[in-house]
Length: 340
Image 1 (cartoon, one colour):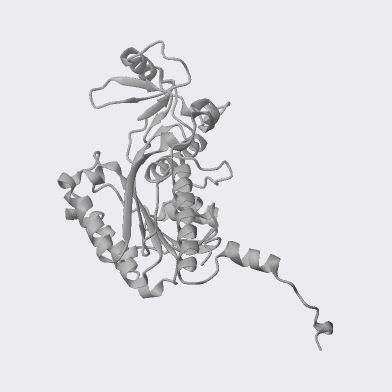
Image 2: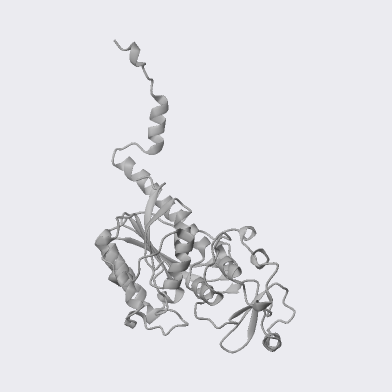
């Protein structure tokens, strides 16, 4: 397999952030699943397909064969903000085992999973150990790393664990951070003209300014209110959250980000269609992924899989793609009409 074209399935698909990342390196989605109907509406508007529903009710045998499994499985059960119940949470935590069930039934060449950073620390590391142990028991070589969206081009501090696995002994390295000169700033993603409906009441603005840690902080900035009630400005957004309060993050302590700005903070292209109200887009972007992070991981996965395929062909006595081309160029062809 050359990995210039490959198939994948998009589990816990949300609004398709992970799909965008793997489509960018030549992947074709042949199955998607998402429980939330509002997210399905956004997904369908942008990808032309309505995801299948509850993954717990879908048999692995009914899913077409595919090359890579992708899944940003629900993280509320493991997050710092959430109740941190982990596998004790029957509705969210145990959904990992549906991923395991499908991996076991279909045995794809690779997978990529995404979750909150706190997954590694939950239950003193036992939850994460359970997950990796189960994945390795299926025969996968597993790699994991915490990546920050800030390092890959979007103005958002969002740390997430990425878990990658390969059936073969593929040598994989996570993507390196991109140069500062290539990263988008707040100025790059903020809209010029914003409707007055996004601006907060004057009393809220004054209250925020009074509690602002650095009142001379240069604009544009995004601030958020921490647990102690203090307001901290940054040249980037804190991690978008699905269940955050209306004024969780404010631009210059004056207004909420627009729907387009929320999508840009996650690295979605401006061609991405918005078909649901503000509150739903806020929830959907909070539940989604930073697309440039997924693109970077996808590139490294396909690079590693291509390198393994070339090396495997060489060890099995088959000519590599480069060797086949060289052999073709060196062949002396004899015209058919000259053969006696």
